Amino acid sequence: MVFTVNLEQSDSDLLVAHIGHLRNVVRRVRQRHPFTIEAMVVLPDHLHAIWSLPEGDNDYAMRWGLIKAGFSKGLPLQEIRSASRVSKGERGIWQRRYWEHRIRDDRDLENHVAYIHHNPVKHGHVSRAQDWPHSSIHQYLRRGIIPHDWAATPTTRHTDFNE
Image 1 (tube, one colour):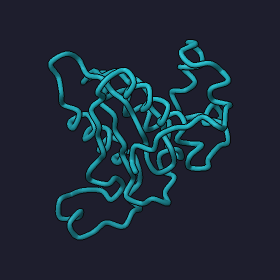
Image 2 (cartoon, rainbow, N blue to C red):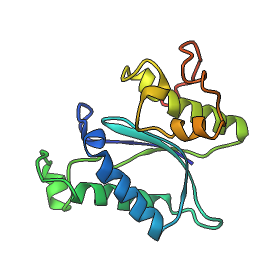
Image 3 (cartoon, one colour):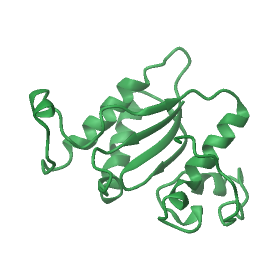
Image 4 (spheres, one colour):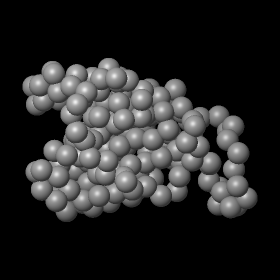
């Protein structure tokens, strides 16, 4: 399953400013509720991930809820919260919903992995995907799953699945 999860404030940099905390929260959730991260990139205000769960387990929502809550609890209360969020005891860090897409086949998976890895370039954070530190592209390069020049080729076409 592919996910895009956004912060409430699109001009925020909380995810990369607190990347160690985010990694720890994801690690703790994975220990209690296993899942495999097939690909992932964390940008300042949103992240993209492809996860697979154990056979017979489809509870992605619970895992995202735990990650979002765990990340939020570790940050000081500084955000502006709506009356609705205050009444529900919610922080104002994350958008309530997230985008999801079920992978259809190997080609769909390959396209989404490429999209995820290219995302920091798309958003102008780096000129080469391999230069973004918060990406699974580094594991793909180390394992030889993609060639080292893939990330350096600026003409590689990637589909924007959110448009």
